[in-house]
Length: 282
Image (cartoon, rainbow, N blue to C red; front, top):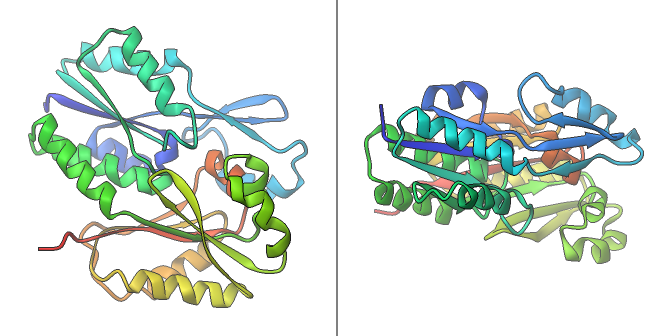
């Protein structure tokens, strides 16, 4: 058994079978709908149904980080299983309290054997860092070696998405420019990217068709890839079309993911995009 365990939160959007294959432990975040709390874990809430209902949900759903106790339980269990170190990688600290709660849990356990890492990313931008860490741990790398690989992936991540509207981003309150931009973008399809934990405007198109073509162009411009995820919020046909239009080899099998409702409540339905990690330059 490898001596280093890898932990993340459910916003990583890693499929359960991959988590099982690579021994990744996932702490579920929380979605709150009409006062009822749902753990963001398999079987809790249908993603397809959530996005179909989202436009009619009043008041809109809210989200919350896992409790410190949830992290402590996972960390204690892993240490009891014999792991000598835990690497816990989480959603961008600038966008959520998940990272801080994980840090607090580790501090309360007084465990020097737990390293908490801010991914600076969301969805598979986080997930691919976690996957790289878990694959490296299974190969027997040291903590330092694993962190080097994770930081390399982090530096190469490209996340780009076309949203159907900025309304959900605006009402999340997490993106300062979204409120000012909303009025000017009512009739277009906005693009957003994420860099170092900051959600950035990345242009717009007048129609969805033109937006999909732009996504294809931007993805293909990255060349051969190490990792690729086609993301959507109840727009699987558009995500598949983006995958089919991709022209370059991908080292790890590409993922097609309907994003978690915990993220989806802040971006809305009918979004589509990608997370890509180009192969490192020789």
